[in-house]
Length: 263
Ligand code: PGA
Image (cartoon, rainbow, N blue to C red; front, top):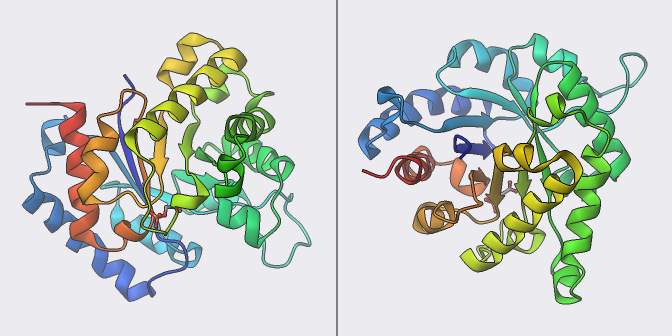
């Protein structure tokens, strides 16, 4: 079983001083919540703040958590105002990057081809990408959600080598669950995660499929994290709203630790 990952996606929230204060607040909240990571039983923890904070924040965090970016551009270095590359992120101390989030696909017209290029650049830069996939409510209601998710994963990963694929995490984030307070049921999450693992098996082999970390994202919070993480094919979470509050985020981390190492 893959080591669990709890990843916080702050999206477009918090000022820099608030991000700085969060670091100690999270350490305290983790201790208060019964963090077991000091005993090497922990899960990976990552937080992705707004991009302008990354270099300074990576220094402040100093390895206590993984530093994530919410995006990297698909362009090569050069005349692209406002863009930044995966190499630039790596040079700032970033460890991981979230790619293909439905909000980027919707707000910035990012296509599967853009995401595939970003993924290639991220891997080449030594970053560990989290590839997001997930269907709209309309798509699920029409019964096309499996084809949709399969298309997203195939477009982004089909050309990757086994070595590359072993450095990719997947996040299943049904769009209808993101920021809505509506969470996929454990049955819906488990069913889709198992399906995603089978797609990875077809593309990259069963050994890689069983080692791939598949996170759930979409209104995951302290009250539902433990039951979602208990699903056999759910290997952690990509957390939006609940990652903005250190106490809530710490509770989700501890839920993942308890699932990974039941006492
Ligand atoms: P949410 O966001 O937890 O606020 O639903 C999850 C995400 O978009 O990554």
